[in-house]
Length: 76
Image (spheres, rainbow, N blue to C red):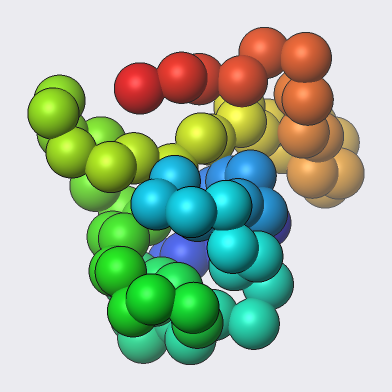
């Protein structure tokens, strides 16, 4: 889960290229780089059709608590 400029984003900890963990990836602004193969994903932009896309999860902030919905994965 990431807080990018006050907006929470949650993604699966798996690179769509080969399933590598993204936990050790480098975050530069809004761009997350996969530590295994260097693929870069802009967490602030929606996924583009036909490209390798991260699986994301809906995030809501309710009464100051961040709520993540794991059962409703967005599959690009």
